Length: 334
Image (cartoon, rainbow, N blue to C red; front, side, top):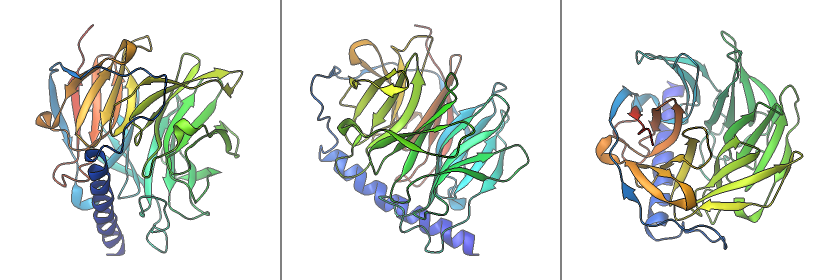
């Protein structure tokens, strides 16, 4: 079938592109270039209890990219290669909620990755899902809304020349923050509005040749973002809605993808390191502790979410091509 052929092509392209990234990381091109930042010491090890909760179907393009949790523990995920949004119940059942239409050219005009994909996702309190779709086509690239039982509706167009990737919602200001890994920008869209505006194009967001600014979160009056190429974790203060001076909170995090906060403060960040299949905790002054590795079942982890002490980790298996999965771990109390 055409959809299966398209997904198979996406999977092959994704593997080739990610393999190139792994080679770049191994060659040391993903080092931080920002000065005045905090350089972490060598990562310490701390074992945490974990288990693989759900195995996804690689043959169907179920390469999980991003995750949002509901209060009852249901996980909503995007499957990048399949261009899908799915629901994963606490019992491990996966249900596809939407599949985005494949571009006529298969998505080869999508910057950097050369295949169409669904990326960041958030869930609002009323159960509405918002997610990003990057297709390389002006008529479909953008921020989408998906209500329960409905079909995706584009609420804001985004540049087809970019790669919209991370998505966060600031509940206080009702504003979405969207990273573009190709253009090196963070844009905003007000909830209920239909216009995207570039919020920051600071040089710390740019790539060094592959993927720049990636994950994004809003926390205690600041926008936090990761830069995969530069291996940095950034904090950007919100100054009456405008970006303040960027501070590098940690560096040397080669291949950092998504991240989440653990606890009430902002001094404990849990992050995925895509290339080396690890999950780390970044503490005060950029101290890095490794929590999970490939030996725990991680295969190119792409995103994390925290609820209480339970850590949810998605692995896309882009280069391992073995077992895309959802892993659950229990975080330590300290």
